[in-house]
Length: 313
Image (cartoon, rainbow, N blue to C red; front, top):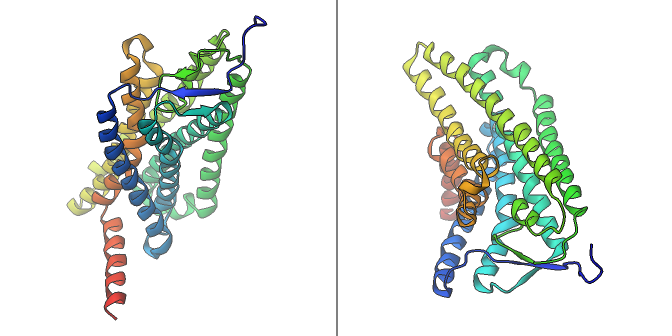
């Protein structure tokens, strides 16, 4: 590196390069989405803890998915909202690296949690008599801890590889948060090792888990078709279809973002794709599960009835 080059100490997040009026409109819309995300996932988390009927492995995994979705939104949305009001507001280098690390941690963890949830549904439908033995609480806790640990370790690898790079300018990140691909474009060194690591991680954390999910649900579908009872078939399909909606939204947007050739997706389109798995998916997950799951709806109605009854008394 040349001696007259200075190291970058802060970045400017360009966000959505639109007019001030559009920024105000987006601020209102995204603030509403953010509130729905926190409220919806918070409700699922509270119901999973408070209602004894939801103390099952399925809702144990769902509660951790809600935690990840809340963390996703809290990591990226507040900063995005601030930048909509003040586009020139900088973020420190440490703050940017922290945001990147946390985002990758939550993304990796969600991928693995979705695999665990598909395995839980496979055991519940294909091996119902052995469900309690296979999906014991010890196994469930181990799977969740493994998901968080692997997600954090993979994110740490990416962070270490980024920190070895010099950043000497420019300092403008063409994104609404410190997304790893956008940050790497500002490095003043060869980033091929980083790109290779990202591709390998995508194969391990996106393609591999997606294949496992598809295999699980193929076997689940075959098992559902063999169910004699129409009501049993409908209940099993309803539960699994909600999970497939979440899987399709998350894996679809992430694979297009990180595995498709970058030239096919201009930077503005990449920002829209990022919105799907950083804001829209966390907001839609509780809606998909609550609207398509009778147990969650029942627990919510019971909680609301208790609240209204206590107020009347």
